[in-house]
Image 1 (cartoon, helix red, strand yellow):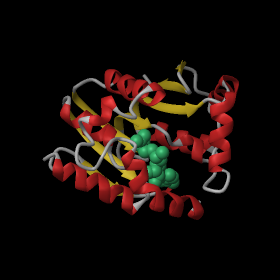
Image 2 (cartoon, rainbow, N blue to C red):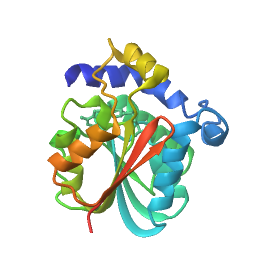
Image 3 (spheres, rainbow, N blue to C red):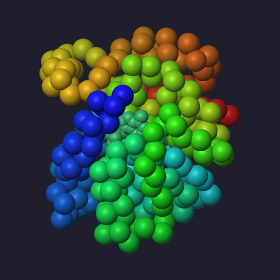
Length: 211
Ligand SMILES: C[S@@+](CC[C@H](N)C(=O)[O-])C[C@H]1O[C@@H](n2cnc3c(N)ncnc32)[C@H](O)[C@@H]1O
């Protein structure tokens, strides 16, 4: 887990750059690298979460791009958490640039040590669970702090791109790709009855319904 953290600390700026250049990152979200699975899962998440009177936690928020979109498209209570200081540093910087520093909160915290003492209406875990050897533990944590829905992306296994990604991450940090059956088994293991799995490009988008 420690090795994973130092990987994310080092990777923060490059990961942020995927969302666009430092100067015009917000405008270039749609035009640039935000395509395919990444764009679809982003749009899906925004559509599912109502615009008002809801609280949202973005677990493993990285540089905060989901949070910013949630903050600019509605009146939601938003908290982004991430265990990487550089990631949260970038998120706070962007929030300031966008004049959103009073509209959302970011905290440096490890999902395993996080005890909010309350529940959020929606939880987001995008580009997150694949980095855990025990995804069931992370999903369980999200369920425990959520009232309505937990949304999770799982990268799909199979094909050249998946193979390439596995190779790229081999010496970086733990990475697991998924088949639909793996996700169904995970849901069964967690005794989750109400959920949907949608294949979107190179991802599976999973919504767990809690009420
Ligand atoms: C691929 S990034 C995804 C960022 C964001 N969700 C997105 O899709 O733009 C994964 C993030 O998970 C964070 N992370 C990994 N393990 C974590 C943990 N145990 N607790 C909190 N954050 C963690 C990393 O620091 C990194 O910022």
